[in-house]
Image (tube, rainbow over all chains, first blue to last red; front, side):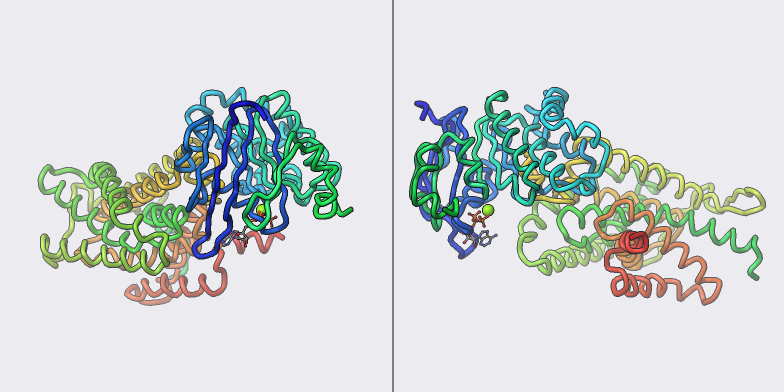
Length: 239
Length: 294
Ligand SMILES: Nc1ncnc2c1ncn2[C@@H]1O[C@H](COP(=O)(O)OP(=O)(O)OP(=O)(O)O)[C@@H](O)[C@H]1O
Ligand SMILES: [Mg+2]
């Protein structure tokens, strides 16, 4: 791991009302890395992301981004350079693709670079070029996922968090999503935190991974090690 | 009595009314869309808008149309404050809490108005109140034409702001998916305050226009409020374009019903339509449209 991590999560605990979701989550993401979070359903992967993006207020622990404590409203967190692509796309269905993307660049910092960012997004997903005036709700699932990722990139993040981006996509599109994530990281210099059901593919593009179990980080290691680990193979790779 | 001439003039009257109906309901739709709250205090601000217009008229001989424009800023401020000081504190609790709070606010506004202006019927008589234009053989009251034109202008402006400005788009995004709005950095709390201000400004604006057509007392917001409920339910609650459709449907139904029943029963039409709409098409006309097309 690089000397100064971009994101540091220390002993995070969080709950939805009375329902405890996270007990003790700690990990770090270095600048330029792709990190994947593994864990069974309900392990707390989404909740961890929601804490980082400010949607879920932690009851304990600390999140540090670029060396500073991150106790901000969600709108300020986006401004600081973190964006979450939520599970299930969450586009605005009765707005056009262009409007969805434009609003991705809502923060002042991102708004100034809107045209540039749009060109970048269209170069990553050429298919969106001809869909810009279409209502987002009328797109196919794959196209919607492209818009969702594109909308996140429009904010010009330093850290991109993707929650199950390949969910419900055909195998060909799944491969394209992974290809684009790698491209965003390698060419765009964006640090990535990835949660995926396709654990093998996630570990193949990730540098390192962490394993969550009932709201706790229980393991960590380089992705290549995790791919070879018998326990990981049994639990997540169906071997 | 059902000559073509007759029916056309009824349709024209309905159309002219629809503009005002749309303006007085738009605020309700915006506030509902953003925070899923029915702003019952709307009736109070509608009435207050009318009385402020009366004051401007008495103090400075200000025309009600100018009064409508003058109302925009202070009513926006009042709505903003109501959100910041009251609604924000209860809006995350059960919806009934917000509803009761806003209902109480309406009663307070009404009673303050009673204390200041008493319960007498008030009206504003301008130089053009009793004038009319003859167009194509139809006699059109000038006040109705003016109200329609002003309403149309206001609706176009609103349409532009919601459709083509960053803040308007952010507002629509908050209506369609507030969580997604938060995730791109939209301060939805600020959008809510803005929506409440905008909605209240529209109430004050519409209240001014009402004084051109009706006399008023501190009790007078209520019936209009019910019409607005009907309109936004017909329009599909969160569908801003639906407000215009709902307003047209209500105005047409009312106008044509008068051909068959006593004018004093006109309000019953709105209530009846509200009940029918809630039961038969809870998603409004837009949903009905989508259903017949698919
Ligand atoms: N909105 C909510 N209200 C109450 N409890 C919740 C809510 N969201 C999640 N939880 C609970 O928090 C725990 C962690 O859920 P979370 O969604 O973070 O898991 P996950 O790892 O993302 O699971 P999945 O793989 O199914 O997406 C679970 O026990 C879940 O039931
Ligand atoms: Mg999840």
